[in-house]
Image 1: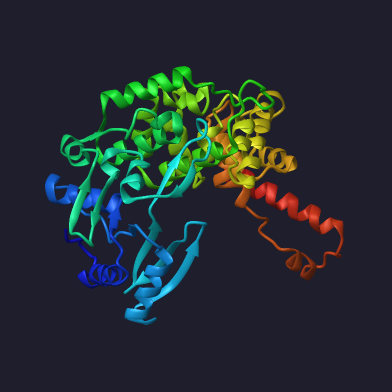
Image 2: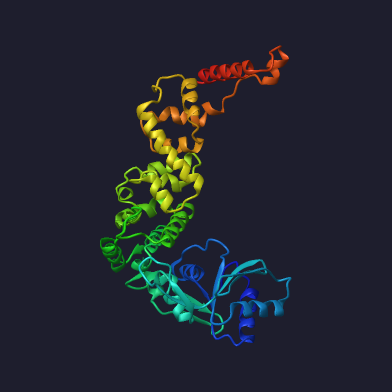
Length: 403
């Protein structure tokens, strides 16, 4: 199976090194196999030169050493080994290659990190998320391996979890399902939708801190954040979130996010204001600060979420009237010490008196006094607090003229 944009010399080099070591299987796996089959059989468009993910039944590090021996450092560079199982990343003729030793896994408890051991290619494919991602192209034996009817589901345009416990093992697979469904235009298979429904219905999900009945594993929170990040950064997120809502799956994050009718509008506002979308998503949760902490989003973004709540309260209780001059609003906002991004985040919620916040964010805060301290001194002003007061006065006048 040819891969657009990938030189045949790369494939032949890997095959030659594997045969020299007597490796029984070296297989290209994951999205590149899926996407090439979509190109060949379903007329999907090939998007770009892929990162190549390989699984080897054998020692990945030894295979890379053999590649270096055969090809030299001119063609192989950037070699890095990761983790206990010797996953190796490198560049071969400028193409990114990710080489992993075949492994098997099982989940000791729902949502915990899996226990991973060395395994076969067949076992490695069985640990994946969907049938369409559980195919492999074995270049040693020139064989397309499809043990779970992935090709059939590709033709049908459907996503199907690999086994009946997929969602229970790792609920983040639901987010992944929405990502792929939105990107590929696929439908989630009926049995997979039912698996989501049953798992959510039975899941002892309680993110409340200190709850003795159930405490979500920290590893799950980390995986959830990463999957949400990929969805927000790379995918048609509006469609993906609509699917998650349709499946009732946003409850896995927060019940209020499941019924969040202004989600798309808020996230589009965040895009317009050049904000990260993660805090804009979470700010409508039942307890935005708590969920931001649980998901361990960036500390700076946690601060924005916290300040956003304070801004909403301030707007209701003590903010100036909507008709107040720009200088009054600017002074009132700036005295609070809030991050500008927190103010923009509050704008995305469209609260009461949101328009002055937007004007401050977009225009008023950037207005400066028409003169500088140096110019005032040149005019005869004495250095001291009087200069600062004059500059503040000039800035306020300039802000009010901008109304």
